[in-house]
Amino acid sequence: MSRNRLIILGITAAISLLYIYMTWIFAPPDVQLGEDVRIFFQHVAPALVAYGLFGGTLLCGIMYLWKGEMKYDIIGAVTIKLGLLFTTITLLTGMMWANAAWHSYWNWDPRETTTLILWIAYACILAYRASVSDRESRAQFGSIFGIVAFPMVLLSYLSIRIWDTLHPIVIEPTGLNMEVEHMMTLFVAMIAMTLIGLILVDLTYRIDLANEKLMRIRMERS
Amino acid sequence: MQQVELFAVAVILWGGIFLFLAYLFLRMIGIEEQLRIVESQIEGDIE
Image (tube, rainbow over all chains, first blue to last red; front, side, top):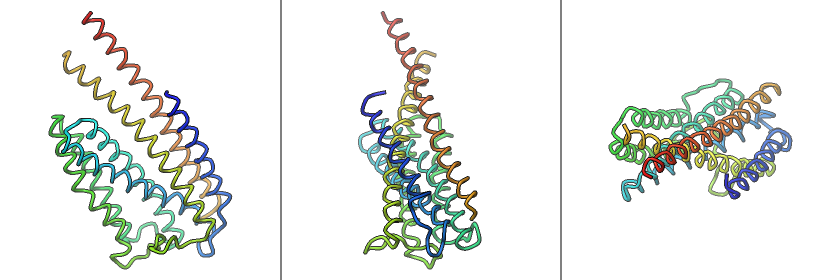
């Protein structure tokens, strides 16, 4: 492993430990939610990282269709897989928070529903990719689907502003609507989750790239 | 939500993240080593 990667890994580990400390010890209980507010930091940060990853899918799709380089297709597929992982964490922690705040795990709230549709849309793209054996058409149509699915990310993000919802609006145009300690914890949570997301992208990309090369060699030799 | 439930969420989430990172790291080392061996075999065949 290169020196730069080790440094990034060390920084990520340190910030992650700080994130754990701030979430579970530093952040005070909320006036309304009490101790349950700690779920909030495990919910918002993965959600925003998932949106960022799906944004990466969009960019990779555009770049693949423009340049035609296979690396963009591989990174695009990686961002879908990891975006789905982070969306799953978001949905699960969101359900726990919903149960604590509204006494029901699932309420068919606009944010919950649009996020579930978002998850299904990207899961369908992965299923499509897994079902097509032709490398070129998988990359082309996978890129197009990655671009076409992106408005679902915007709809999921804006759903709490478009429809009446139970979901609180935390990010206002004037700033964050929360206590200072909670704001600081969320800030650290965002940095930690983003770094973890980037390390996962790097590792998964290297695995998929090596796998791709091995498959090509085996096909050429058989 | 009870304190113990919150603690369980923390352990599952963070344990899951670190286990997944460790799995990916080991898989990356394994597959890059496999690729290196195959590529050196091809170079050997060409020579």
